[in-house]
Image 1 (tube, rainbow, N blue to C red):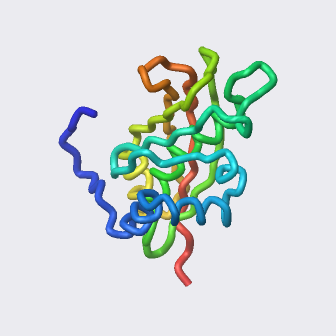
Image 2 (cartoon, rainbow, N blue to C red):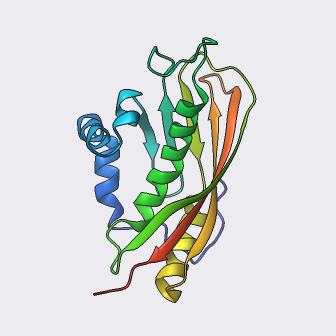
Length: 173
């Protein structure tokens, strides 16, 4: 990712808890089975997480396959959302007052049959951080688009999804 000079602070002290959860396989699996059981059964993994980028993968197994012997599009979509959502969670974690997030829209293209583990990469951390900062300052809802590109291990693109996330500062009580 190219480094632009920016006034946006990408490091979020509250994100340490999300980073800890995402980088400890046992904790992450427990989180998935408690909060996102389908993702747990599909065996989604967080392969990389930092303030700018997240990589999530989904395997090709009997749990994720379709009748055409490839990864089911819904499993691919779930992994793509996870790559954008974990990055968004990193940037809203620990905020006071807290910030809510919600998927506002999704667009996708599936370009190649996937018959192996697919890695979804989202590199929109700076855009997400900017949206969170804006909603914290203004109290208004902010929409941001986060793109997730799914590739095989050799780099062949199989899917490209764009999630529009809505962020809004919760009122302090």
